[in-house]
Amino acid sequence: MAQQPTEDVKQSDPVLLKMIDSSISKFENSVLDFEKEKVFAFGALAQNNLLLQYAVKNPTSLKMAMYNVASIGLSLNPVTKLAYLVPRRVSKVSKVVLDISYQGLIEIATQAGAIKACSVTLVREKDLETFEWRDNFTPPRNPPNPFVKDKGNIVGGYCQALLPDGRFILHAMTIDEIEKRRDASEMVKSRGVSGPWLDWREEMIMKTIVKSAAKWWPSNGSQVLAEAQRLLNEENGEGLPPEERIINGNVVTPTASAELPPPPSRDELPEKLVKYVDRAVDRAEQLEAWQTCEDHLIEKFSDLHQRSFALDQLRNRQAAFEESNPDSQVA
Image 1 (tube, rainbow, N blue to C red):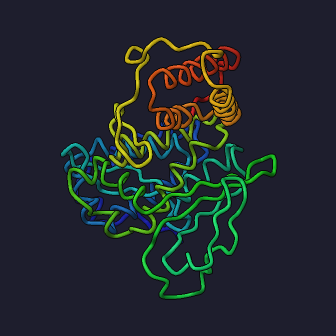
Image 2: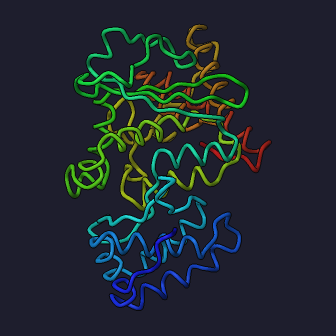
């Protein structure tokens, strides 16, 4: 039976009831039932004193979190483990936010038809004795055995997604890459390794892997997946500021066209380089992974003339694609 609103929550601040009830209009076009989500929200407030304190201090954030529940379409039902109301300090502001688990991100992508199924596997020290990574489109040989205990520290992990056309696409990250992303987030910069990174480390590692892997999944026009990523990165403080990105584990600023020399023509460059860029751009268009491809090309080409050519090819292809597909969602 669903948990009913408690008297403690009702009496703590009547504004909280008003804030939650005021979000009902946002559920009119949502796949979720407002009355059920209202009960789940009350249950979360009743069971988490810090969440209740933040809601009382910043009731508007509770309302905005409920707006996000409606727009993302993931239930607060604790049994499903897809999304939660949690207390979070972002930019020195205490507030209630909607947190989305890695299972929630996978659910959104599955509902959108971007993927058919997905799994996340953590790799530990002793797993490396037999584990053999092959490539980003072939499952590894001798994957970790989940029933073996005492396998040592986590050394990384990978996400394996089944695409609608039957292909697999895999994405691996080392623990160093994961922790560099963690340490560059506003949440950790402001408070250190605390909160979910301290209490639910494995879950956050898996979420980091899924968030990074999702850049390579076909978007299928899913506004919801893009919005979920934005919410986690910006509103919840889990990502980098918009002007920063991570390439190969390092925080960098993007390369603007104005900072580069004019791009050389194709016949001025080695044929092997041109073919490499063409393959990368073709893959970016196939998966609508423009930003991920740009990051890769910036990392690949330290020579600014070569980088200018590569980014010019990518941006021209992206512009042509967006003109031909005005309803596409850019990854």
